[in-house]
Amino acid sequence: MSVFLDALLNSSLDDSIRGVPPGTAPLRLRDVGARGWRPAAGDMALPVLTLDEDAFAANRDLIFAYARRHGVALAPHAKTPMAPQIASALVEAGAWGATVANLQQAAVLLRAGVTRLILANEIGGRASGERLGALLAAHPDADLRAFADSPAAVETLAAAARAAGRPPERPLSVLVEVGAGRAGARDRAAVDAILAAIVRHPGLLVLDGVATYEGAVATADPAETAANIAALMRRTAEAFALVRSLAPERPLLLTAGGSAFFDMVVTGLAPVAAMDGNATLVLRSGAIFFHDHGVYERALGALDARQGFACGGAAAADFRPALRLWAEVLTRPEPELAICGFGMRDASFDQDLPRPLRVHRDGSALSAEGLRVTRLNDQHAFVAVPAGHDLAVGDIVEFGISHPCTCIDRWRVLFGLGADGRVRSAYRTFFG
Image 1: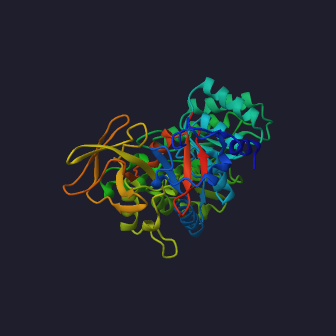
Image 2: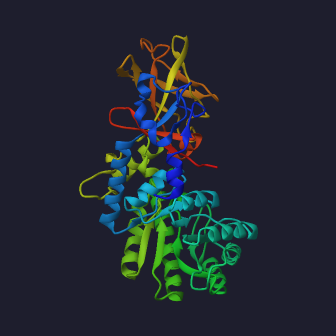
């Protein structure tokens, strides 16, 4: 365990953190489980966001098994939880490395001892390059691969390599990003320009492979999405051939794969890596470990519909939503309305509103059938209540969420629950 992670587990929590009951004396992060808190019983200050640790572990084992079966590696995107405890644990469990979106995220994981990183984003201009160089200089053991989709991005990375002061035998690794809909080189001419810019910096930069992101070309039409992704995979393979021609002996990476269409990435790029014989396909899926009751529930339903999850008989439907939001009913001001104590500051709402799953009252779990969140204010959730439902003030409602990436970032601490519904761990988040 890194010094940073050990210090993190010894850091203190108090009632300035959502979820910690008022009046709780400061306690160490590693000792939270000894309190035996159960959000369903009202032991915690609500609202609170929790992680079902058994569901998370099952999701981890399922996607790791899929990766082994298809001969690919995983670098889970850390932007979803931004919890170095989780990123480190995934690497210990067998992940190739981790993915980050910016320099702040890279700094957090490097401090936590996660040294093999994919920086899956362009980072800006020369000043940003110098900041990356300072980060690499502070972490000489960093094994970082950065995206470039233009000669200007290459110059940024060259500035980083100079600022890092690395010896010529340890140049900064660059992945040529091919793309559509967002970042990434759009055609062969753009790829050629990137390659020419990289080879102008021997001893500073080295070609390390090709990257893309398939989610940026998805549409509401499944057939159109499949065609767009297949075309992007062909362009990525063509760029990879160009990189290989310039680096005939070097082990190279191919990397893509979010949590919705990774099967199409495997179909398009795994044969390219296998035929090359000296390349690794790395998937960057991050939200898959958490799953949800919304956007990813639909995405994995579509994955099963196209029979895209081949993993020894397992189906994408075997993934389990691991996040729960717990909140009390504050008032029943109208017969068909309840106001619950959470809002836009607590839950994601960019894809779907939270979904009521169960009602907890006096140790019993009751049905939430018919309950529906209709809108959110900053601190209030408006819940439609069907006629005859006896939802009462003080009931604790357990909600599922949609889109983990825009939910966890609202929380400084994510509490891990065991099978008995009691808190057994706590994860600090570092969203900046």
